[in-house]
Length: 64
Image (cartoon, rainbow, N blue to C red; front, side, top):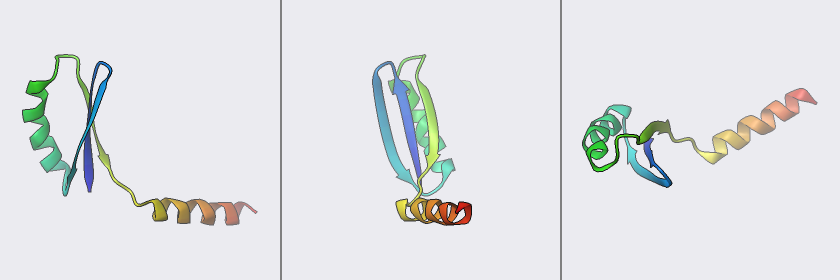
């Protein structure tokens, strides 16, 4: 899953989720018309917290 983040000045919008980055990109083209010329955007891949916690505990065990 992917999340589209658009930041325009002090306003940050999180839009999604999308199944593919292509779907987020298609929506981005339409949504940028609603924001100012200086709006910044990113497409993020969503991760499950359990996968991150499992990776951090495995790396901590390997370091010990």
